[in-house]
Amino acid sequence: MSKFLVHPAISDKQLGFYIDSARCSGCKACQVSCKDKNELDVGRKYRRVYEVAGGEFIENGTGGLVNNVFAYTLSISCNHCDDPMCVKNCPTTAMHKREGDGIVLVNTDKCIGCGTCAWSCPYGAPQMNPETKQMSKCDFCIDLQLKGEQPVCVVTCPLGAIQFGPIDELRQRYGHQADVKGLPDSSITHPNLVIHPHQGAGRSSNHHQGGTK
Image (tube, rainbow, N blue to C red; front, side, top):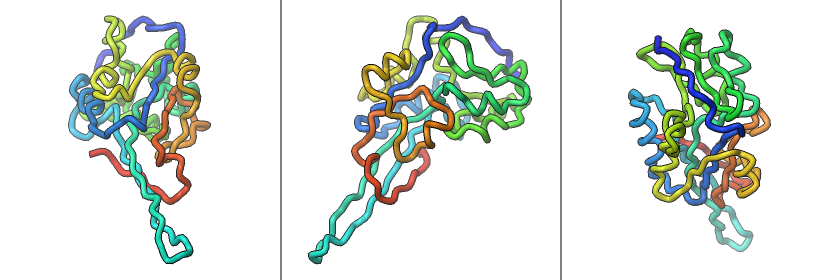
């Protein structure tokens, strides 16, 4: 069991992420830097880059084919939701949402490693720590933010496709879009997430989501 460290709230406003999927190149620098910063074992990823692809060739009625094939990447971590299913279903209250900044954390002094939070989260954020046999997840790089630094995924993205801050300010600047192909419906947990979608995300054709590599 690892000792749970209590940190003061970073903000008195709910924090969230802005993801520019149209700008994301799928380089996975955010994913790798997060694993490195948190010293994660093989297979455990707090931030994951998903590959979404779809489309088809459609007959245009004149003997030709129209191509609407697309592919794009989505960088996703915990969205520190307003109505987090992981918190609602945790039997020990180990998974909790902080006052002020609204960051969702695992209290390892209470966590029994049952995995209910992982089964409940539609984004796959909580993950088992095989060493402690307890759950673990993105903590919004609280330790870095308390030192005035940015979350590691934000600072390492070479294209500036990830931003963070009070979610109301992000929504005022970038809108309220949180539903794109490849993600669960935002009405389930009300994630504190804003996405600038890739042009392919608005297409109504068949699509599939690939895993991370």
